Length: 217
Image (cartoon, rainbow, N blue to C red; front, side, top):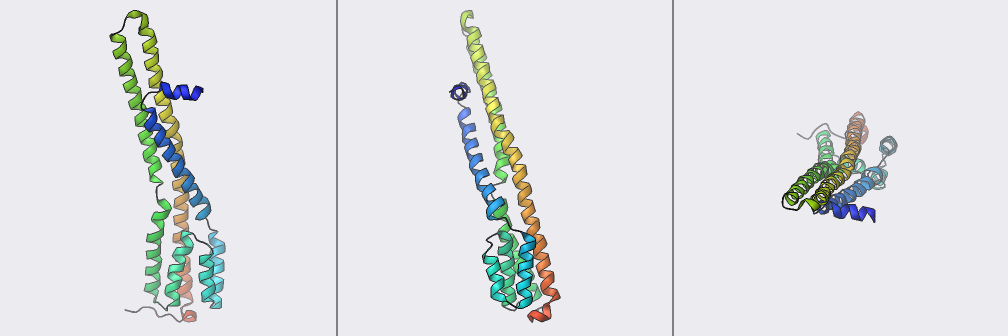
């Protein structure tokens, strides 16, 4: 009940800040599930499994490995393996890797940037609520009899401080979690770049085994 009372004392600006907080929580839950569970993949185990099937000439096995791991890394790898199965040239395989990365990387970073925006906007809304609360407080004091000035001034200052505090309560976690999720997203992107290059180099070093031409130009 004390929290509800504090919220009500914060004034109108508490509601848009609350809306930002709800959006922040929904984004954090969604991206945490994606980045740490759905998109998580042991890159070394994946690469070892893939190259094992490649060396055996088990083309279907390669695709099964990718399909069993619905992560961006496996999807990018699958795109180049399909070109390999279709006897594409080195350039075709490289193009498939680049195309797959361009398609999957935005999915990794999707909506993370909103957390930084929410952090900034929540801070500014808290500040705006502080200013409007103080303006309303001093305006009321100026037009009120001395007996009620202290009460009105206290109410206005309370509104201003509560709004500031609530804005920071939303902004601080948003900025911190943004940094954590952005770092995780960058790790996944680095894994895609690293494994893509390793797969491409592995295919090039075994070109004769796969029956590839160097180019189709």
